[in-house]
Length: 363
Ligand SMILES: NC(=O)c1ccc[n+]([C@@H]2O[C@H](COP(=O)([O-])OP(=O)(O)OC[C@H]3O[C@@H](n4cnc5c(N)ncnc54)[C@H](O)[C@@H]3O)[C@@H](O)[C@H]2O)c1
Image (cartoon, rainbow, N blue to C red; front, side, top):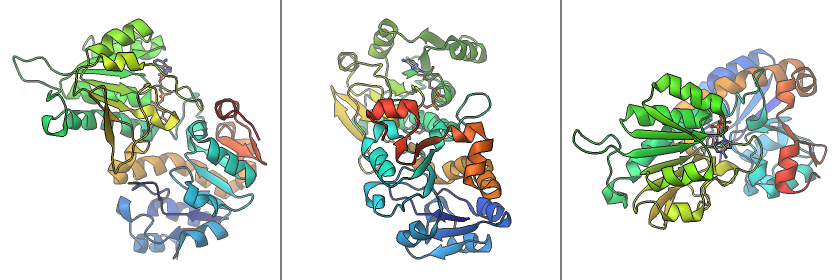
């Protein structure tokens, strides 16, 4: 099997889908790795390290895409890559097709076996390949929110932890899953006042037990959301309905009630965003203002910390990549139900129900 590792081209992206350590593992199992020159550079891995681990370095992305049966990536293929995808190729990466109907069509047109990291399931029904990046994004959301709250950046000038004798900042997190729970952890660590909302009472119970009353947990409903958001300094959107377009949980009129200079970080933007006023931004221009509120909605936040993110992501993908090398892709999919859940496109069709519903077609 030839595994192709192209350099990521999304704006500001710094991650790479394979570390030298993973490269050593798969080449020992018999795979050939074809890595685009400097693919690991922004995560701090040199071509020399990959060569020492058994990789062949290709001078262009085209060479990687042309020769590899399995393309291992981080972000979804961008338009500039559509022409490089080969008929019948397997691509293992984040796809987020609910927010990308154009890519979904292209994958179908090229008969790509598209295995999406975000829908691969663990035995516990969780999403093991989404988890590490959600943890990164959840933690970053508070770091970024604290930064954009600064006066010189147009923020309201609130220090999240406050100082003795002042009110700490109020952080509201909607969604208490992987990203939301990590936002809560960071916000508590910084000394902020924290409110978290979810529909799943078990998640709220867990956080209530963990933080022993230090965090307010609320059922996610319009009344609670409106009340909490109108009073917050930093709002974090962290909801997910697996594979589906994110539900809008905060309306425009609620955003309009926020104090000027408050900050919204919508982590769920990769699934379309869960706040009505949000549209995707990029690392080049990560924020914009609406109703006087600073909006941050970068779909590839983990790229800000490429080294940590690459190591976290590849540690999670390693068992699946190794399984595909050992058994071949088809046998691995047949024998591992959780990996098979990752298949979003196959034989010219969208085969994941939620994705087909979100994009409005299945072939
Ligand atoms: N922007 C980025 O760079 C980036 C990085 C990583 C993950 N993400 C995205 O972050 C989102 C969240 O991922 P996650 O791993 O935390 O998901 P998760 O499944 O662990 O958690 C999502 C939570 O949302 C809750 N939820 C669903 N509908 C809700 C509603 N109406 N109100 C309140 N809560 C609701 C669920 O009960 C669940 O607890 C996903 O879209 C994921 O793709 C984005």
